[in-house]
Each structure stands twice: as C-alpha cells, then as structure tokens.
Length: 353
Ligand code: SAM
Image (cartoon, rainbow, N blue to C red; front, side, top):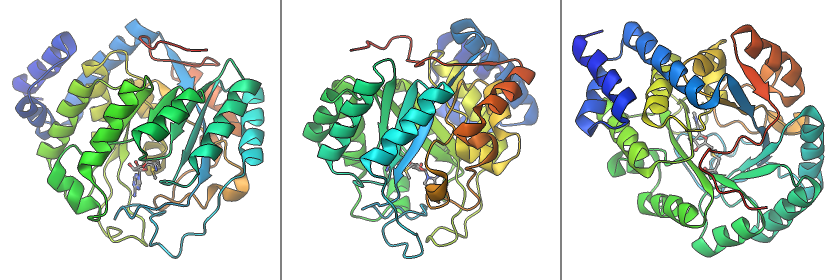
C-alpha cells in the first residue's frame, strides 16, 4: 500500500468525504494490504456505532415477472428461458409467519419491476403491519410514480431499496435499453427520500464496461445522497442475457468497497449481499468483517427460489436460507458477531407506527 492510499483511507475515516478524483485513486490503489487496512478501520468504526451486532432481514422474492430489460439480469422481460412465478398475498404472508417465528423483524419484499399491482402491494403491506406491528417492511419493486410510492408509504412500508446501478449516465445507457431512463431512476430515489422512506441505493461491482472512474462516481454519489442503506455486490454473468459472457466482478474489490462505504457513512445499514456470498464460499463472512452489518437470508418458498435467477449459481440454500438462521448465528458468533432479532433501523430514522 502506498503512503498516498493510506492517507486517503485515513482522511475518509476522519472526514467522511473525498473528491471523486481521490475516490478514483483509492479504487486504482486497491491492494490486499490497502483492503486489510481499510477493513480494520471499518470494523472498528462499525463496532463504535453498532457494536458487534448483525441485523437480519427475511428476503421474500415475491415475483420474477419484470417489465424491464436490463442487459445483465436473468429475469429481464426478454429472457424466454426464465420460468416465471408470482407469489399470492397468502404465500407472502405465510413466508412472513415462518420468518417471524424464526426471529426476523424485517421483511423485504423484492421482485421484478412492476410485477405487483400497487393495490396488491399496499394491501399486503397493510396486512403484514397489522399482523406484525413490531416488524419493518422493506420494498424493492423498482420504479414507480411519486403518487404510487406515496400510497406504498402510507400503507406502512418503512424502507425502499432501489439500486441506482451506476451514477454515470453513459455507463447506465450501456447497461440498459433506451426504454429505461437514468433520470427516472434518480427521480425515484429522490421521491422515496421526500416521502420519508429509509432509502437504499447501490451498484454492481465489476459490471460490464465499468471503470475505476465509474466506481469513484458511484462512491461520490453515495456520499452526497447519504442513503440509509446501500447494497453492493459483484456482477455475476447470467448465460441467457446479452452481457452473459462478460467476466464477473471480484469478491476482493467488493469487500474493499464495503469498507470504504462504512468509513464514508458510519451509520449505514450495509448488507453482505447474496451475490457476494455466491461468488466465494466465505464472501458473506469477509463482508461482515470488513464493515457490513446486515444479512438478508432467503425466506421465499423453496419451490420458487431457483426461479429468481438474476445470475448463474445464485445461492438460495445453506446459510443463505432463512431456515438455517440458527446455523448462521453460530457462524457469526465464531467470527465475533451477534445476530439480533431487532428491526435494525438506521440510527437517524424517524419511526412511524
Ligand atoms: N426490481 C427491483 C429494482 O429494480 O430495484 C429489484 C430487483 S432487481 C433484480 C435487484 C438487483 O439485482 C438489481 O438492482 C441489480 O443490481 C442486481 N442484479 C441483477 N442482475 C445481476 C447480475 N447479473 N449480477 C449481479 N447482480 C445483479
């Protein structure tokens, strides 16, 4: 690690801000030594804010129907090989009941873009909140109008995850068809913020055509937008997509970026994602040790899990499965962390009941 990189990591730790050029130098300056240095500082930072706790979220993949056509994603609407499904409200509520008994106090309803009608989303959220008033509901269902997001928020949804995918317009346009709009994605994130959701953005590490400058632009965007949550994971090719022959991103760079995000925003809810767990056997543990503090085990009905195939070899069993949470607890204890049965809100969040 050069002295310049070490100094930049120290500045990010102390001031929580860098210029885009400085972020770029940190990305280009990646080395195992720099990553270890950043991870040690990031872990100390997360322990100051959150102790050794890890929050768990029950991930319910409500449908793989999608009206979008992202060039990298296995559930894009033109992928005819994707075997489509859509959970009923009853199935979603059964997942919640199982998750509640297992100790989950946040349910994440994630699915393809526009897969559920807004009326169905709001009635399901209302019912979840009625049955489990001590639980948080996170939605991750893609782009909607301000008015539609307003109805979701009023039904009781607490958080919304919408990865920005890339903060560089040209890069965005290489990853998506012209029917999709960078400006609309950004508009959505701002609307969600205005409506009082705890908001999550994020991007894929090593996505096709991504340069260190793009990653630096992402980091600067995340610094300024200051989301409550941020999801990053390696790009992993899916063979039936137009970008299916591009190489995967690496766990090493993803873990390093998780540390930088922790130093940038000490209070961030930062998951060690499924994609990170899918790319290397100890990806999730490495992410947690490097500053991540959230894990999202899969609560979807086992019969449908394989169908939510965003990328090849996506994990959905073993410790990735919500039913294995007792084992996950032990794995985390072994490396010095404690899974807690709490909602796990952002420290600054204003909670409405
Ligand atoms: N429809 C919602 C949305 O647009 O935010 C949520 C579902 S979307 C499929 C969830 C995330 O999966 C995307 O934001 C994208 O970053 C990630 N993803 C899709 N294809 C991927 C791939 N091939 N490798 C890694 N991550 C991928």
